[in-house]
Amino acid sequence: ALEQTLSIIKPDAVKRDLIGRILARFEAEGFRIVAAKMLHLSEAQAQGFYAEHEGKAFFAGLVDYMTSAPIMVTVLEKENAIGDYRTLIGATNPEEAAPGTIRRDFALSKTQNSVHGSDGPSSAEREIAYFFAESEICPRD
Ligand code: CMP
Image 1 (tube, helix red, strand yellow):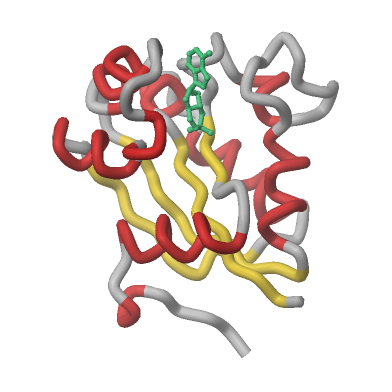
Image 2 (cartoon, helix red, strand yellow; image 1 turned 180 degrees about the vertical axis):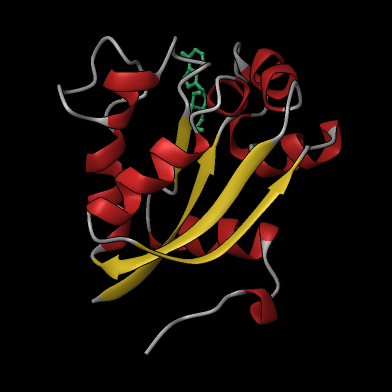
């Protein structure tokens, strides 16, 4: 089915000026960018986005990192977008990410792993709504 997923280009990638190269990878793999914005998350916004990880050992570090520089959030549309996007980015830990994946090519560590993708249909719906109003999403034909 035609799906939408939320992508985040994270602070480590924005700081290293990799936005364009990463967006080009999305488009080359058949994802259409149907919404996009750059923002610098507040602590409350980062905590809310990652609420499911509250209480985990890496939570505070994750929030610190995600608020350390701007991010770019996009909504990507494609047949099977949610699963295909996770395949494109690779495993959370770049050392375990398959060759040719975005994390294998760009990520620095498990925390500074360059990109985020929704892990299923319900998180995609929640995460898209977390950052975008309906009116900011621009599907094409
Ligand atoms: P992301 O896909 O954005 O979703 C949750 C994030 O938590 C994940 O990417 C990682 O950046 C981070 N994360 C998950 N597990 C760990 C871990 N064991 N140590 C550090 N960071 C982690």
